[in-house]
Length: 221
Image (tube, rainbow, N blue to C red):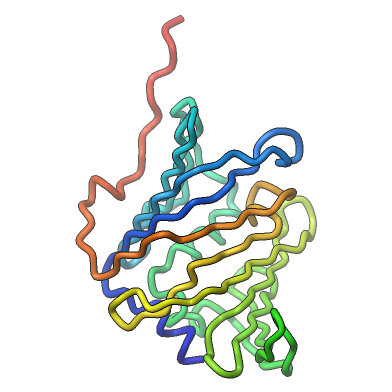
């Protein structure tokens, strides 16, 4: 699994730019094109900004809690079960800390993923349901992760990673990411494809850039 570990060696901070479609409308079936900027800083600070033609939204993790800002500038916090997942996902060195994050990990065989053989590892994160992780037998890189979130009962959620490239510093990063459904926390419909356009690791990120946003004042009554 050394290949998976290598994807995390981004020193202390990283900036990632992607393009994707954000599910909107009834059941998330109306895709809206967006440009996404992600700023991540060790140990667990994250800010994602989504720019569309008509509005901007954001979300992140401030080191203690997850937060999100809607198109009207209102900042809220997800429910407790989503906070647990957000905290785990915000770990800058999550691949290196995988064993610490999971109460139990077990290799359960070999399966075909995207036409390639991969080791299947089932891990059970602290306070959550099991995840199925597939590691490419030749490269060791993570090709696919399947989790079973419990937002309104058990609902399958898959993340497919592909098109791994060297970022320029010897780090392998997936430049194509597909999530089915679109989001493991709130959207149970639709599919999102993220096409990474730029990765900058070993980058200095100002605290103001990655700080939690505050709700904007509402319109005067």
